[in-house]
Length: 284
Image (tube, rainbow, N blue to C red; front, top):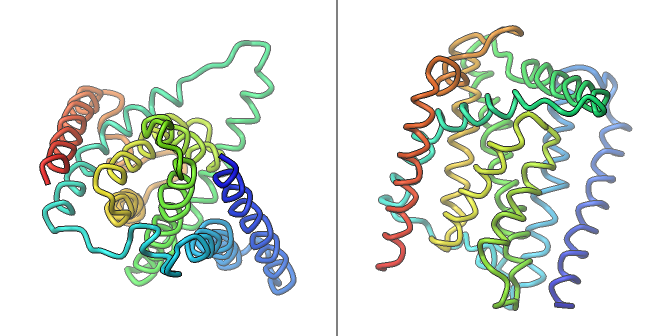
């Protein structure tokens, strides 16, 4: 127990220190803090300092052979069959995610918490507006750059941090701790840290799905691929459909509203896909 808590405190301490250094450096160097370029640099620095660097440093310290990617279970490439299965699961899950996001957005707090609800909606709108600014692309080169900055890098860093480090650290030397409990704790933290309240439920469930894939396969590359796929579809959808401030692309609406039945069907197919993957990993 003590070793586990020491590791968690070490990881959190590194996150705090490196994030503070990154933000301080950005403030000192940045001349126009409101420009899109400056804000993108801030996001990259925060992602690196908060999620990527602390996780790799901890993995390096904790692995007996000083091989961080072995500790993170990234030293072996997954089979192409596993890659195809998780890609299919992620693509099939998109309408279900949209349905859950739509239901989550309809949550109404009690009248006594109306002030909190208004603050949450304002925060959500600010995040959406900033995302739109980030995703604006005049040509395909900018779109490809956005995929790197907003799809690949965050997926890689966040999975190394949450599934690779947090999820494994909680279970370290604790055989009595249920994998299910750890997966859901990690998924809740993963969703909460994004501070987007009306997307909390679908993001939590998606994080849990990544967690189960990681535990069943023993390979962190698979949840990274799934996370990257989800992010990339969002980036490409915005570029292809020219999403406006008061509308959403088909990639964000299919499975919700009048197409709710597609969301339900998607949820069933996704669960079946996860069951197939689970059984596949049990017979190896």
